[in-house]
Amino acid sequence: MKSIYFILVNLFISQCILSSQVQSFDFFYFVQQWLPALCDKKAACCYPTTGKPALDFGIHGLWPVYNNHTFPSNCNGNSPFDENQILDLMSDMQKDWPTLACPKNNGKKFWAHEWNKHGTCSLSMLDMHSYFQVTLALKEKVNLLQVLKNAGIRPDGRSYGMKAIKEPIKNEIGHDVVIECNNDVFGNNQLFQVYICVDKTGSDLIECPMILKRKCDENIVFADFGSDTEGSSISL
Image (tube, rainbow, N blue to C red):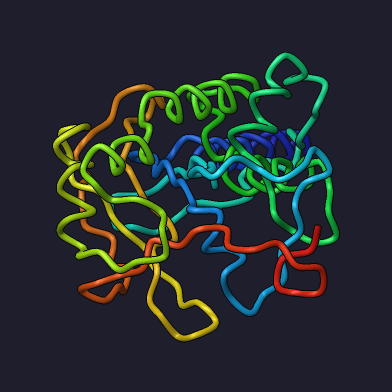
């Protein structure tokens, strides 16, 4: 009798631990990446099997975050990625959430990674379909490229001031954003990713509880796709 009691207690404790891993987060980072900055560097890139993506920001992910800026990850191995649950979203995923990983592929491996690592940590708020659906909706809500173009900032390979990039985005969405940069093959600092804070429902943009530190120069390049050449850093 005692052994059964202890087994039940251990099961209860395990469920509590699992539940806390899944539910305990404070907000999301909605992260969009500037696709040319993935290829305008030494690492090779491959266009998806669906073809060259539009010259636009692409979704990187929707990441649960704690207020101390640590990230829960891989929270529930019992809920793996299942493409059958998002078949109605597939065309929008291919357009707005493309991958440039090599060898060229259809993006499902990328989406599976994002769900398994990040999405499973939001299950207390969003099931799999809702997770991808709200992320796509955020992309429609925040058209970064159009906001920057309206401010005279275009992906033309020229340098722009950090303040000139951040201010129009803040004016559009009402909140500060975090800019992340990387370096191109010539060592130029360039716009890479934009982090926007979102509430736990995945619906409302919020002010970031804390400022995530990402290093960028005062002036950064806004890269274009450039020429497509076989054997270069971009593989067609």
